[in-house]
Image 1 (cartoon, rainbow, N blue to C red):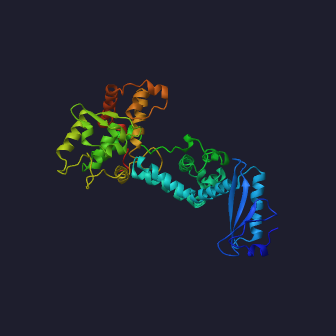
Image 2 (cartoon, rainbow, N blue to C red):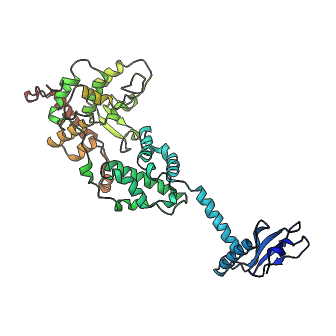
Amino acid sequence: MLTDVKARRIKPDDKPITDGSVRGLYLFPGKSPGRGKWIFRFKSPMTGKRRDKGLGTYPTISVKVARDIALGARKQLENGLDPIEEQKRILDTKQRELSLPTFEEAAQRAYDDRKAGFKNKKHQAQWINTLKQYVFPYIGDILVTKLTPADFASALKPIWLEKPETASRVKQRCDVVMNWCAAHGFIVASPVGVVSQLLPKQPGKRERVENQPAVPWRDVPVVVREVLHEGLKTQTKRMLEVLILTAARSGEVRMMEWSELDLEKGVWTLPAQRMKAKVIHRVPLSPHLVDLFETLKENAPLADTPIVFPSRRNTPVSDMTLTKCLRDHNVASDTPGRTATAHGFRSSFRDWASENGYPRDLAERALAHTIKNATEAAYHRTDLLLQRREMMMAWEEWVLLNTGSDLQGKLSTRV
């Protein structure tokens, strides 16, 4: 059996010394006396060929340590494993673990890959900021391979019932990150899909939806007469009038461009990229609205801007501009204690259309709502512009011409 005494006496010209206790362990002589190199010689169970595995140098690796290492390799052989290949596999695994991202690192990289596809900078920032606020403090520093459904459930639990809409969005974003990890080979599959099973049932969507405070449709003429048509005719008041008469969304009006308006044909065509449903939408314009736009065009500043309602910097006005006008005039809504919102006028129009017998399909098209039924959507080949024009003319007539005595004084607490 090889001992330290024998090993210290090895000379450069000596033959390799076999250990004697572990089959296949040899000490090969080095270039100077008392120094050598440990070799474990074996037959690979994978290829059937002889292989030599270096175990280090003597005396850095003592006889006992070399023997222990060789004994471990011998056990691997007994289990049908090639010690050299096993070492490579272990090194690869360690190297891979060193390159594995934490959840925060993965989220940032996934965000960088997809941020160019966001509609606007606000949504772009919200995507990553919600993860920073609600998830990173809990699991941001954990490797993605270590994360379980329970980890995501613990992060979402504080907002799961209190802020269900936000929680649902955050959960979806976590799933995007983990699917990104799966696509890059860090994990097999996202564990986020079953998280809901570990948390209480959230309130239904109908229970969650908070309607935008709206002016009751019978009161809309009063708002137009006593707020929009009284006093100084500001740009904001004109924007609100356009919004009310077209039943458009606030952003659609604020970002309206002259190139979208065909005043000869009386049509406002919104491009798909500006629409929520990503589908081109045509809005019929009444003679009153055509006159309004022609007046705006005549009085437009000399600055070269494509925007119909520009700010002082020739950019779209803030999304708070219309709301501020309604708040400044204390325009009440159908929600107790809440001021009406610009978006709420779409509800006013929708209620008017229902109560005046207009078909649901016609009113929904006027609002540019998405048809959720795929079969029904497949058969929609026209936007019914002519029929919608008649309906919108009737809506305008109600808003601008109806001044019945039953409406008098309803804004006494608003202006």
